[in-house]
Image (cartoon, rainbow, N blue to C red; front, side, top):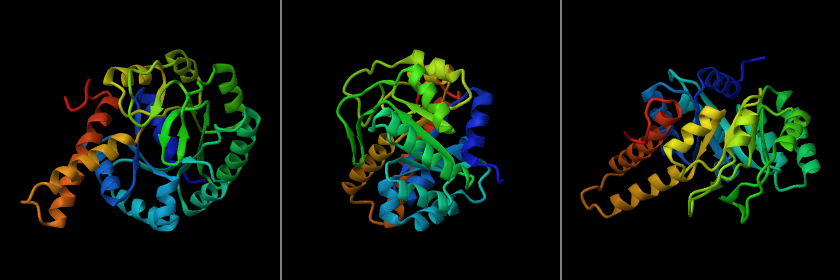
Length: 283
């Protein structure tokens, strides 16, 4: 079987005791900016596509776009499907060529979450694709997935979930949230530390807005895949709004280059912290 990029990247991260940026993208500019940022500093990266982005572009077109962007790079770039609740869409991405899929059945009762995740794990593994599962509820908004209240995972149930589903990465709800934080979140560092001692990579969802110190602590305890989404959207939209007001920018290509640069810089700052290169963003 061909070596799976997703698993390889996380294994290498675990050996180095660093975190890997899993960056949610939504078009060519953001995908290219993310890979450029990673290549500039020489770290591997996971490019994530939401279910909505797949539906918007079409699985084959989106796969071809990302595959074209990552060709010829001197780093590993894995393509990952994020927060998918549609089994048929998950299977489609597996068949088209995604390296990994994240099936999110965390809204279901425990036994149903186990059963549905296991079904998708079997399908993915038979085709050489890795799978990530989630337990507990991460609060906030992720496209059409809305959770007003977080439900943190516990160690015993999470271990049972991992063993019964045979997933390749685990995303436990630890108190982080999707979107913008309204205050300082109370995180379950103990659970990350407990799971970090196992063989299944720990995924941190809702990374945007956490401080560099918090990221470093989560990574030291065993967090290996660090999801970033809102940061990319905010950097993209902020730069666009700035450029729209600038009457001197009237070339679409120049416009796109400026947006790409802003997005890349925002992502790069986080990747440098995740990989231990710097202690703070952009410093």
